[in-house]
Image 1 (spheres, protein in one colour):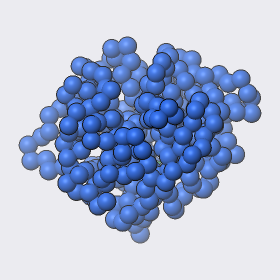
Image 2 (image 1 turned 120 degrees about the horizontal axis):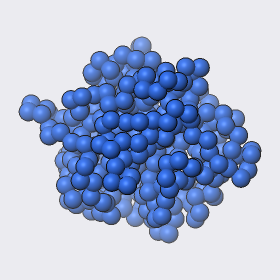
Image 3 (image 1 turned 180 degrees about the vertical axis):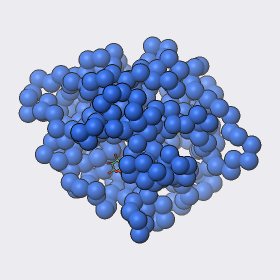
Length: 326
Ligand code: BMA
């Protein structure tokens, strides 16, 4: 198994799997990496996106402020563990005031495609839609059209065109804490006009019985696109968010090759089980060092803090195939 079209990230944060760990992913011993009160305005900092940038790391962070409105902030880090976030929210530049009118933003993803970083997020536009913007420096962000009509969440771009099109996973939803959710895939010639919608996967029992949504940017391997996604179970005390994996066809990525039956991670530590929304493990980024296949996965814990976990791409691919329910 090898990672395709990846880059070396020699300074990727990393710890070896601890002895006695039975799972394909393991947590950083210093978690959480970002506390809820890192900047003066923050009530909580969680579901956030990180990428390699200029030999260091940068990202877009979900900050719910002390007025409890959902905002996006830029962040920088030399080592991927110690972060500096801008005190003020990102002010997106947008030619069209109807598109650029800011309501709220949350759950960002960031990906390098061709010549710039693209940011997608759940963007308030008379209900949740998928906002799209690009940046080259994590200082100035240029917002373009929302991808879909409301209501939609979890817009996750693939890192390259497939069959000539830009491709985005997404999840049609409603305007509340949606009690349903399937993953879909849409195509675009220009990142503005989206169509050729294809069904990818629906909930399928247990930890992923209520809804599913794409997580980090998919990782290209010679066995298919490795997708880490979240799944939701409805307990008598509310939703429980866990994470799992699937392998998608390289050229027709709406076709699921394999899908793990068990979760790879679920809320189990104190900071995942206790917070503003208990029992949430919500991955938004997986930074890969292509030569070693090491993954640093950034996830929101209990809608309150950012956690870091580690995995090996080859182990996740083998585990997904060995535990597939497809
Ligand atoms: C979802 C989104 C996520 C959040 C999760 C749990 O609907 O709002 O941002 O982590 O609920 O509250």
